[in-house]
Amino acid sequence: MLSKEDIAKRIAREVKDGYYVNLGIGIPTLVANYVPDNISVEFQSENGVLGMGPFPYEGEEDADIINAGKQTITILPGGSFFDSAFSFGMIRGQKVDLTILGAMEVSENGDIANWKIPGKMVKGMGGAMDLVASAENIIVAMMHVNKAGESKILKKCTLPLTGVSCVKRVVTELAVLDITPAGFKLVERAPGISVEDIIKATEADLIIEGDIPEMAI
Picture 1 (cartoon, rainbow, N blue to C red):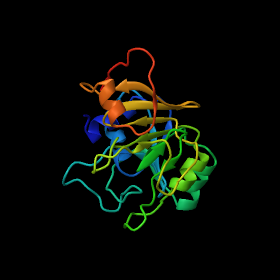
Picture 2 (tube, rainbow, N blue to C red):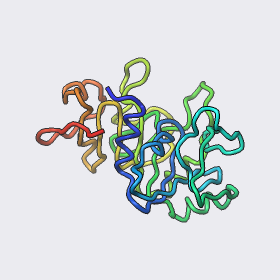
Picture 3 (cartoon, rainbow, N blue to C red):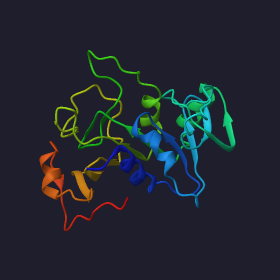
Picture 4 (cartoon, rainbow, N blue to C red):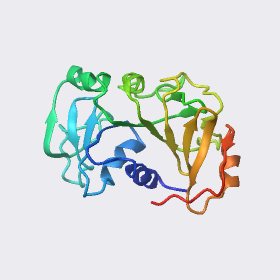
């Protein structure tokens, strides 16, 4: 199975030169560490940052420079800071080319649940509601199963929804899945993971066509 860093490396391959990208809390924040040096990307955080770089090295953190998840970050040359109203104006105005979010559950029709587990303390919805309502290209970075070994790739979400029919692609420690009108389509499998392993770990039905290649990390 892939590590969280490997998931971020795979998603970094989806980022194109000139993109404006919003990184959600969790695994998505790692993506900035793995974008190739030969492309120019502007990472946006809804707390009012444009031009985020990779995480700082230990001992070089600045507590005043954080992302939406309250993690210390670096700023690339030309980066800027602004208030939340301006930041959400970018999001609602569809100025962001790619949104990468974490999730607790994703359903076969592209619904996402990532902001609340009833009865448990979580950080809150943050900008997730605005992001899923405004973004046209959403990739989810998540673990395929929960700590109990239960699938998080579902026919129907069981947790409160953040957005409906909005997710385009999911990358987990086991697989890359596209969401099509007919449901989840298996696109790639993690190195060393078989199609049968992915089927067993997935509650939703999978569309499997031909030989499924391994992910290139």
